[in-house]
Every structure is written in C-alpha cells, then in structure tokens.
Length: 331
Image 1: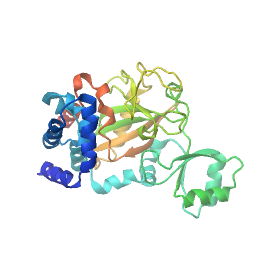
Image 2: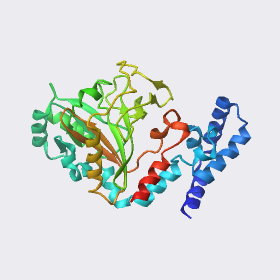
Image 3: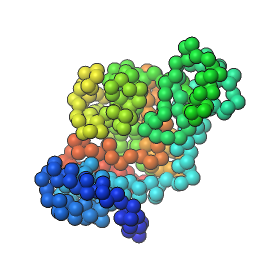
Image 4: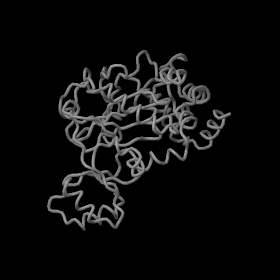
C-alpha cells in the first residue's frame, strides 16, 4: 500500500516538462527511441520506485533487471526513512543546535549559540577561537556556512551581523589530519558515514574543489566511495557533472589508493553514536578525522541515496540495496 501511495503522489507531483527533457537527454546520449525510454521510465517507477531523475542518474537504461533491483532508488530510500526514522526525533538531527546539545561529547570542539543576549560569551569564544565557523541552525549542503576571521573586527558589530543573518551557531574551526587535508587543504574533507540500524552500511569521502571552503557535492565538490570493510578508496572521484578524477584537479593528489586513517575507530564512533538515538535508525553522519581524534561535523536525518552508488563506482552495475538488506536481516 505504501508503494502505491508513493507512486500516486509522484504521478500527481511530477514535473513532466523536466521528465521529457530528461528523455531527450538520454536519447541524445544513447540514441535509444524516445517512446521506448518513456515507457521504460514508467516501468522503472512502478517496479523499482525510480523517478526519471534516478533513471538518468543511475543509467538504468543500461541495466538489466538483476542490476536494477539492487539500486536504492528515491522511493526505496524514502521507505527506509519512513520505516526506521521517528519524525519527532528526526527534528533534533535537522536542527544543528539541538544536534550539538545531544552529541556534544562527539564534537570535540568549542561551540556557542548566539541568543541575542550573550555578547560577552561571544567575546570570550572569539578570544579563544580567533578564526571560527558560523552557520545557521538549519539548512544543508553547506549553504550560508562561513569562516570568520576576527582580526580587526568590532566584536559587537560582528555579533550583530551574525545574529541578524541567522548564523546563530559558531564553532571552533576543526583541523583535519594531514592525510585527508592534503587532498584539498582549503576545505574540511568529511566522510559521510551512513548507519542503518546501528551498523555502517555505506561511506564516501567528500572532497572540496576550486579552493572552496566547503566540500559539498553541490558546491563543485568531489566524492568517492570508501570500502566499508577496509577503509580503502578504489575508484576515481566524481563531480556533479560526471567528470572523473584520478588526481585532484587542484592539488594533483592521487585519489585511488588512499586509505582512510583510523577507519575501524571511525566505524565504532558512528555506531556508538547511533546507539544513542535508536529512534532514528537511518542516519548520515558527517565525520572529520583530526590529527589525534575523530569528531562529528553534523548528522543528516535524510541520508542521500545517490552519490554512493553512481555508475562509475558500481561493480558490475550492482547497487547497495543488497548490502542494506543484509544488515536488516541481521537485526
């Protein structure tokens, strides 16, 4: 019944002009008949809960039935969220202030909420952390996150500016370990570790680009999967346009062959945190590995289903659904 409701909702809310634009794009790329593509998209929507965006993104037009049923599509991802994530508890992960309060011991850094009435606390924070990160309490993809250098700044003016622009969370700037930092020093290159029912189900490294201060895929960043068994990177990184990189375009650091430091500790760290919020069983943790420790940047109650199973990163076209189903059977 849930699957049928999802399909009906998608049918009524679909952007058909964009759908036909996608069909044309796939046609130009593959020379496949547009009518056949149209009905194949409909079929994949019914059979695999894949929208036209999934169809193009995962190149389902090149997959057989056995391969298609291993892809975590948007519909399947939404079903995981609906089944394993309590709505009220999810709000705490979405709000960065609430997240920091709940998982303070996992942050390993100073942070402060700007309330509009704590200028003196802010001054003390700045004295200890002359360069810091400021961000809004909600939002995603690194939007409106800035790095602030307090040198020659008027503290009250800075406080008022941050508060008025709703950047009410200020945090000590994290210094990542040299092994990860060297890939792109201008950004914190985080691991997105996905836990399902308290176990690590997937992981990918997000890497900044073009000297941007954030590593997000939507801000010109790169991403590449991490093998959850051994912490190795086997593939080339990819950007949102589909370009592949064996070496980082700015630093020339080779990406395949990198081993994530302290990988087993990273997994244990995320699993332990997941055990403290069992009401949300499907979480994407943003992890930074520092010189001497591991810390969270934030967490996501809507783990993305796309970037960790893109076509160049799938062996024999197989997606991650079998891995997720294996974890669920073990619980």
